[in-house]
Amino acid sequence: MPERKNSEKKELEVTLAQNQTTTQPRPDTRPAIGLCEHCGVGFKTGEAKCPSCGAKLPLLKKPSEEKPVEENETNKNYIIKNRPTSYIVKIAMLGALAFLISLLNFSIFPAYNFLKMDFANIPSLIGGFVLGPVAGVIIEAVKVLLMMLFNGPSFSGIGDLSNFICGAAFVLPCAILYKYKKGIKWVFLGLSVSIIIEIIVSLLSNYLIIIPLYESTFIGFKIPNAYYGFVALFNLIKYTSAAIITFLIYKRISGILHRL
Image (cartoon, rainbow, N blue to C red; front, side, top):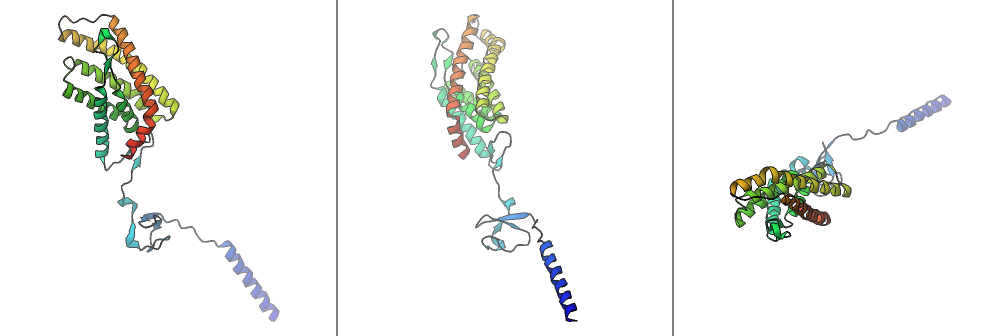
């Protein structure tokens, strides 16, 4: 009898040991429903206190109550959805800056002194990188409108139209490429493509739109064919200079804009 009891006891101990080794606690798969305002640790359904600091449930704040900054997966531009004013203010600020820079202009071809060299496209280009292609074009429009408001229309507004067409043609290609492709080589490629496209657009717009408007508005005003060569050279110098400066300062300026 004692031997039988001992064997039954041993079998019971073996069974308990097996149960202890095979039975493992189930992982807690409940989703976190909030964050602690004290320590930031997530808590789960049914918990009355924070698992980290022990704060009571009434002090816990649900993530849905927060309005986080949303990151765009394609261009890494940060836009606060519940603060559209920030987006508008940045556009207005860059547009005003572009206008102020446009006041520092000078001629490089005495024969065509109305071809003014300036660096007013740099804020538009930076805005296109930071805020997106549409914002870059809007900044160009703000700049041109401010120029018309404070300086008066250039050649009955024809010069301002040409300014906007050329500026938008320069900003759009590189801003669109930068939206989907990051890295120094893509920035360099985008700026190079933008310069080429801008020169082509400027020649076509002058031939099809700007020059005919000049000649119909100002009777007797004729543009020689040599003018198109000066236009191509002028745009090459102007927009290459803007591209180089933007390439050198973009990272610093974009950091400031992101923090605003």
